[in-house]
Length: 489
Image 1 (cartoon, rainbow, N blue to C red):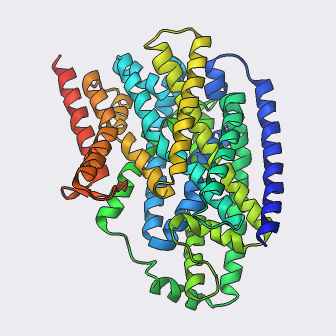
Image 2 (cartoon, helix red, strand yellow; image 1 turned 180 degrees about the horizontal axis):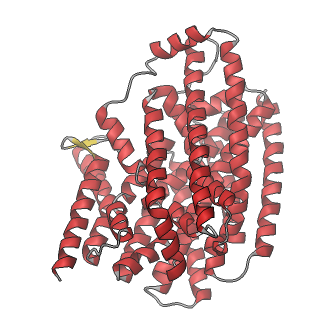
């Protein structure tokens, strides 16, 4: 079965790549000159395209691989965790997106760092943000490669610890990322995002229907619920675990450059409003869907109906696909590739725009052609770091994704203050922005000094509070101090 699944998966993947490449070539031919065109699709996106690129950029292999496994092993807390993100994002977008959209058009922002530099009056704020983006987004982007590689290894029938197959899969994913992101810029990514988003929804729904049919054909609804309860799926996470994971996640829409940049792209305010509405509907459905898959898979295992034995969270979906019909496995596998490629491409382009505008324009004062070259160079450097991190196989997909948001969390108070029209002293703003990576690095060094294992969990308790909460407290304190200093002038 493994051999047949591999052949079918490759055929479906090749079909997907062919269609996606045609879309990318089409986007390249329609692309005009300039950074605004390359990085923002000319600021001309409809509501539907804006929503699909926002959703596809956000909902990566984190969901269909990472969240399924998290739900399988930890239960209802995974649903609360992910719905907290969705509700917080919709609220933040409803409050701030129209203001940010208008200012981005009036002031010509391309990168989020450029936005902060303009609002706070210092190019060094943009430089600090750009460097923090480069460092902090490595775990999140590498999680996308990890999702693809783990699935390939399982479908091909290899042992989960087959390092050679895993690294080969990482290399193949990298080629796709670079081809689609750097050929046609954001316009190509946006058009493939719409294609990818629809594929993700369809494949996830089919996987759920197949799994539900399999489980409920062998047990009644009462037995399934009893099996879930006996497995502890209805027990809530501990308060420190939930707070540690939720804290950085609720500010994702403010701190992650690839999604902040999406606020600049709708063609008008009606398109922006539709973007928020469609994204909310997409997010609610997809969240409930993937959590239900995790719950059903666990119930099936408890009842002896589903024969999988995952040793880690990221192996649940790949092992389910090894049991499914080869065509279904191929469709879901390709949706994982699609989701991962979309998110990683958006991150690569966001970082390229940061290097181009924050460093090339504001600090080095380069011409546009030189800035684009600098952006390509930053994308190449980031890709190398991302591949090395993914090849090391450190951590779970959910853990890596949230870790990136912990390191970016220092941007939240500064950005919200700037959006509210408050002036933060640039020195304190830079200190707040750098707080996340510095605190995470200090925690790792402390663990090494103590001789224990390194924990990358954002919920790791330090002096009575989760690590992510400490980052937020320090960042808020620095931002408030910056407000006081600026007002005293």
